[in-house]
Length: 295
Image (cartoon, rainbow, N blue to C red; front, side, top):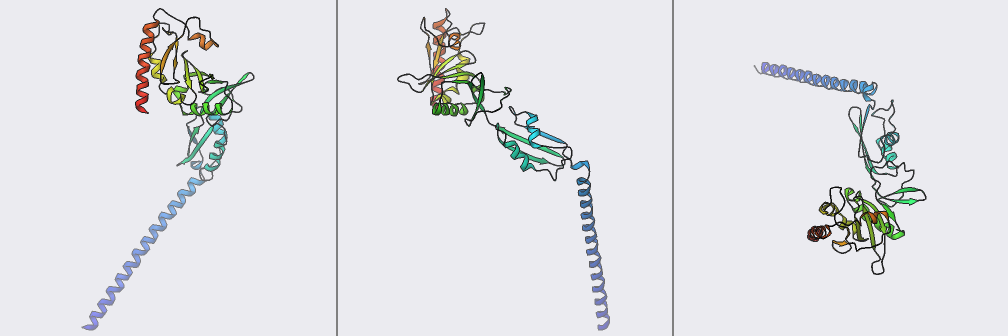
């Protein structure tokens, strides 16, 4: 009886081991099959047009042309995703004087995503017969083709540290506010060595302080909207906005002389001067109060 039990146990263990070995082989075959399938897919991808870069999505470029970016990333008809160097493309892009930073990513199966952050053009300075753009870092833009979307205001009379300061202030302004300034002149006075004059694209003259102009000018869109104008769009009141201390409207005196065409354009008077002056001053006071609350 004992021998039969032992024999039964031995047969049971052999059968169990055989089933386990069979199951292990099935798992091994499955793993091998999956690996083989993956290898085949990789080979198909690598050696067929599927792996060739067939499209590039570019974002963030306003002043840098697409052709300039295409040249920098150098995607050829033979470029493949697994050999293409995004690091080299990034470095080439950042060599451009207008590009602050760049990001190049591969998007499976065969696309590239390029995102650039440009340096701002914050001003223009005249050199001989040409205007040269100044970038936010103070450098001058070489080989300018005149096709920038935002050229910035023209600077006049700024040298050395004063030039650095106004560039810093312009860089701190919102782009939409900076685009409303046509010209900035350094205009020091005996008791105001930091005085500057701004002439806006809507023909308003502003007197400000070089050290505070960025903070004050962020409210200019509201100031401009508060100005009363006639049907032709001309100001009903002739004067200028003083942002050197607070915000106030200063009417021009009769017979006042001007130094530039921009100043002449804002000195037209009408019969409605007093109402316009009071309305504008009231609006400026509200804006000044809001500015003080925010600060």
